[in-house]
Image 1 (cartoon, one colour):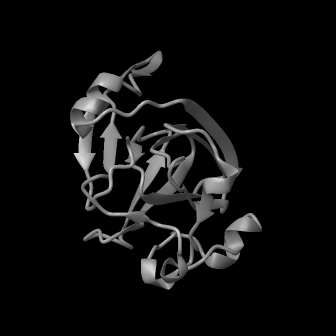
Image 2 (spheres, rainbow, N blue to C red):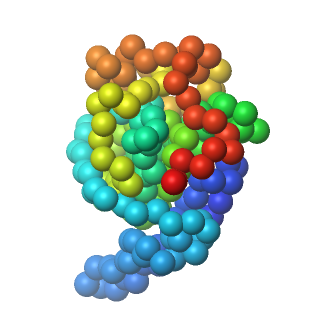
Length: 191
């Protein structure tokens, strides 16, 4: 398993070792000990989620505020998505910057997204099955979002806006400059 820091150092791409032959493949997709060695701190995942979506479905950008902030470890089982994590920690040198990576059933890459980031993805193939771990339960009162099309974020979703399929909630999220609820850089959200 390789842990590759991205342009925002707290965000990692994890690449499992895939063993394949004429029968198929085997891959170890999660190891708590290796994750904690790479991070230098403990993360306790409490829930696994899965969704299936069709091409053009864009989910996000979502986050939860403390005390129910969530770390996510995301991957794609089938199909392909463009996965995006946006730094929303005020005072961070990378505030408003993002990491975008294609995750697919073929490349088996995973994205580790710590607390303090908004997260979203768009489906690039006919369908995609998306799976992820979270380290905190869903809390409606802490649920927040960020506008996927905020020009200040400069996210290239790789599909025309006219072909995107969004929930009503995701069409009404605030711009980064309008966020009143954010995280503070340097604050430990894991205690």
